[in-house]
Length: 449
Image (cartoon, rainbow, N blue to C red; front, side, top):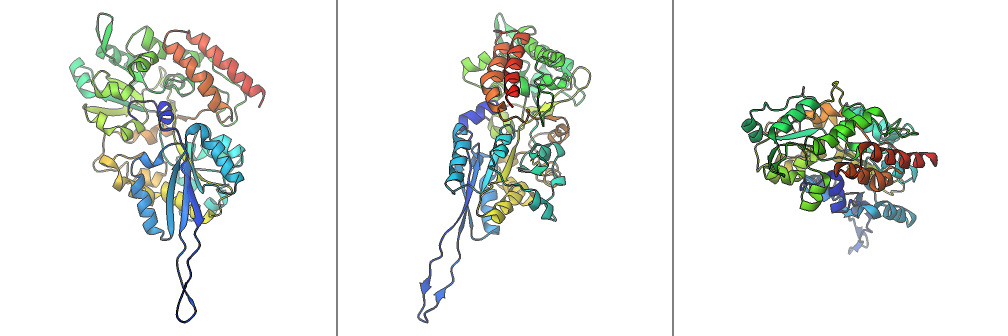
């Protein structure tokens, strides 16, 4: 993702809506000499709406081309809308009776789409399908898109923010053993200290960077046993001032201010770069991010001899990983329900992943949430994997943490959680002060729920 965090990437591409509109075109009747009309085939235009430029993701063009070949008469059209305009545009289209047929919805704002009656209940379609089953998806992922006992979306990717990317050359030079799946936070700190290089007040090589720093997506909150709400599925109370949450955020802050092994958020703001940029230029030894970092910037990773391992557990062995991920859904008012469902199954299932993988640059594709595809040679059993330990995404899915399912959480993140976290990282507020501000703001949204 060009070195940006996923949040910054979504802002950069305008987190748009990809609409697959299934609009039937009137067939042209051609009179014959006998007075009868020659048959013609109507073309259905499938409009897919989402929050990011799906046509820029790995293998999208290939899977669309294959879908159209396998489904003559259906033409897929993608539409991208800026994030801030996405939901309002969908609601406007529905009111005008011109809805998209398929929608991509990121996991954090998903609940808004359900509560505003935008999505079609897919449960009857899933129940009736003999091949495509909810049990074939990672449980926590399909669970995220199940609300009030009904499935409203099918997960596309398994993307816990669990990937510890590391520069093997730096480890070799420092005489430090490569990361293992047994690492804990103390091991991470020791390695980061060994590989941080300073010259006076200037740091020429940082040992570690955390790509997703916001308190509700922070690795160290979850691997220290912290939480941000009393429940992910049905939150009623904020827990930002939980002692374990404070402990985890303090560990992250200490990496920057006490141990000086990690850059501050302000460092990236001033430099106009991201973690993968620093990593590609050999100025960063390790960073934790999502697998999408590699999917979107394989050219950057190719500049250094890198490896990938699961991000470390906490001091007592606790694991917890915030997660990205998108679901694809059908519009509640689509006039082409069967075709929309067929596309979702194709895209999320084995045919779509195989077609996308075949077209993907350098054979790098998102880890699929559909377990049969995940375990196939499309991903896990890939005979020529782009990096070792591809299994960590599926392994970490069991420890995945989503942001709380609350309609106001997106706004809370952008206006309070992210800015306050950056104040911690820049040394402008203490952990207790910033988490206290997050707690107060969260309590207000729960009070009016």
